[in-house]
Length: 414
Image (cartoon, one colour):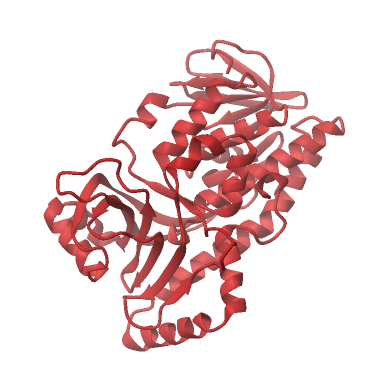
């Protein structure tokens, strides 16, 4: 990785060095594509113990991407395979169990976000094609017929061919371009926490739907050493609550919070202990009306933000990465600039249908399971029982969860 003092012209100027932005820079580097990566935070702060207790489900396709860009050795021992997924309506009879056939591999892997960041940052430091600028912010973005540039708040100017907006849902690059959003508020908050528990999770990811919101338990690797109460089995909790209740739930003592969690788990994991601080954030749907402009492309949450149900948000962003790197590399082999309008238009065409389909399905599931009442619950459980008895339909849903449906970029293939 080049020292950030450098201001040479690079192919890409990636604004946002998070999970998606840094994966993009590394994937591009493996294809000989150079980049400036601008990140306002300090990497040490992003990877400090206890700063971010969130975890992500990495689909089989996303895992292929990490392997294909050289992160397999670093990430393999840190991930917990998802052997099966259990979907239930309030722990009542009639659940669906998604379990691959022998030899088909896991449905994905669960990772603490911190572990993915550490692997990405280590790879970026060793990569000369990446100039990493941290602790700074872009204050001016310029694009013209011959290139693009970004002026940082310390006065440096970074030249390149194309800007990549990867700053997340509140992307200033997207807003400055005047790109609109199709968006709505779910009027719910997600409360994320880390749990240690008495009984093993057996590599099962639980999606428990309550009328007030989904309640997900996602398997993580066992703790390396015993905790104060002796619980070493570990899971990530994503509990969706109405916005009006979020402040009250966050204000509960740890003991009271765990008591409420235990009620919704119906004794699933036995005794519980809180091992990571609670985080709450509002849930909304947003999809950019376009994801490219003149010498501009959006990736990840800057392009689309969805409900965390089924854990597909990061995976959707990683499919952006695979598609964008592929069209950039192919265009450059033909002698086109990375910022060429033809190249960017191909990226937008490729991603539009997949993004729309995935986000529409996830939004539909949220709304379906959010309908209150015994009749609605009975209908849902009847439908789930039907899916449980239909192997072909279950296989379809499992392929969607693995990210293996549709036209996959080469980097996301095995």
